[in-house]
Image (cartoon, rainbow, N blue to C red; front, side, top):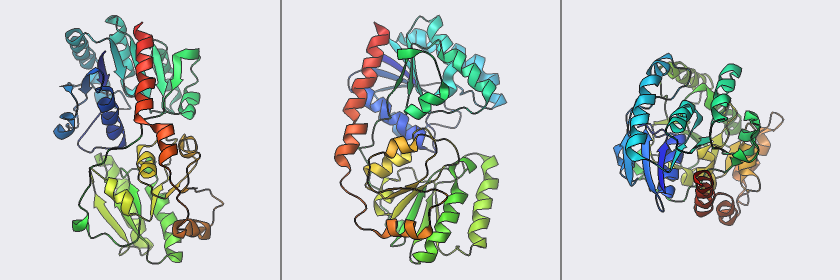
Length: 358
């Protein structure tokens, strides 16, 4: 089957980028996959080489950016020319910010599926996107929570397929980072929606009980306006007198080895995260995980050992016992493969493609 996939990957290599690359690599095993990448932020060439066929084009995602809205007509024409050239059997749009490309698929008479990791809080924009989603042949959600929020009355036109698990890792030499022996970990973009300040406050309480526990932050701000939030985080660290205990690593493209070395992985988003990639990475690498119950996270971690759901009533002593408990993590491999196995994922997604092509 000839598949044209639309998605995002930038040099920052965030969780969505890692998930998209994973999806394309899995699909390319049995199909001819062409990939269109928005390159406004630059493209990581090394990762492009890992996909069989790749076309790079300026396909602007429509978010809350006036510049991208202005560029949308150019993107539509550019994408239409690519579709005419490739003549795919199906167009797979990997996230909702490219919802308007459904029009191109319909004009070109090509079946289109759209994969949602996205949650839209603005009512007007959500209604606008929903009108486009009504035209897709199949809308694929990453969690039942994500599906419920969009409230599309399309019956079997809407399905839930969890993102594929993370199984292949590139080991990283950590010796030059001089990491502490015992550390809690954040792997995240430094922005308000990721809840970094909440993690710092939680870690501060935890450090009073586990004095030898440091906090390692892998990531940095992505856009200039996020500098303000990073400065707030740094100021909080100083005010809590944690400067000698918090280590800022900056951007780490291949963070997998960090999960293996940490005492616990923190993930406390401030938004309704539908299905975070870093949780998948932490589960697959047997990390203990502290998270909250926002969005699709409870659905994602259900049944797994070694996960602590942090609630407002949770005491620091309970969290400390969890971090120090050597019996917390059992073998998660079987459950992980059953829920997020790559072969099962490819079968489900290919089945969706076959049905819309028929």
